[in-house]
Amino acid sequence: MSLPVDASVVTHGIQLAVAPVFLLTAVSGMIGAIAGRLARIIDRARLVEDRARTSTDEEFLQRAYTELAELRLRGRLANGCIALLTFCAFLIGLTIILLFLGETTAFQINRFAIGSFLSGVVCFLLALLCFLTETVIATRLLNFHMLRG
Image 1 (spheres, rainbow, N blue to C red):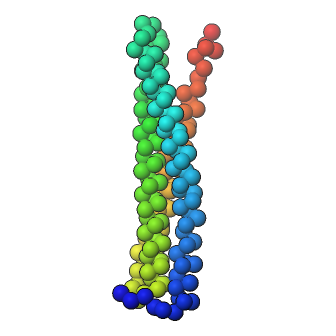
Image 2 (cartoon, helix red, strand yellow):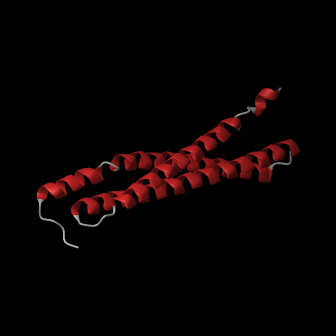
């Protein structure tokens, strides 16, 4: 595998390969946001568990078990979202490598680059669906028990 010495070919290869990096920026921002939500879910679950261990109020215990079940589901969705985003980042990184190699070598791997890019976008969209589902569940939890009067 010999790389051409022609600077214009290498420059064009770099320009072509850098375009998907913008998606990586979005992915890294989402991973940070989801990781923050996951940390809050874990903190809330620990708080509810601690309160449930010391409570003898049956009504409170039932609400606590219900909330813990929803927090578990939210945690799983957040973990799934992070996994999908991580796989998306991997596929976009692979796309960058394939585009660069396809442009600067004689390898005909552009079809693989298309496949890896589209797969990365599908993972990104699935992660967005996980995020949406998790936020819907989170807002559904806001039923304000004190207002039941």
